Length: 112
Image (cartoon, rainbow, N blue to C red):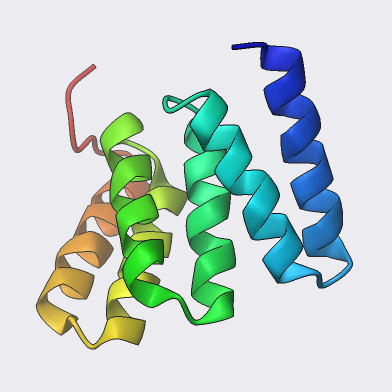
């Protein structure tokens, strides 16, 4: 895996996103995480892009991957909460929101 190739794909995806080309952005984000399954930014961005596209179940999967890779990331938990809300999974959304709240107050979900 080439980090340069991954980063170029990520930049291309972000460009598509900025232009409102969500389907194209999702394709590039998918290629990023296929090249580097440990690429947090790719998973998080793909999840949020898919949420905007209404592909909520797949977005949740990406959100879960992002929180697994970086369990102490505030934006990852906030995004996952939004995904769960959109899917009507209120208990899961509240749990994710609670983790985001802990992080916003300076706490940790996982000790590093």
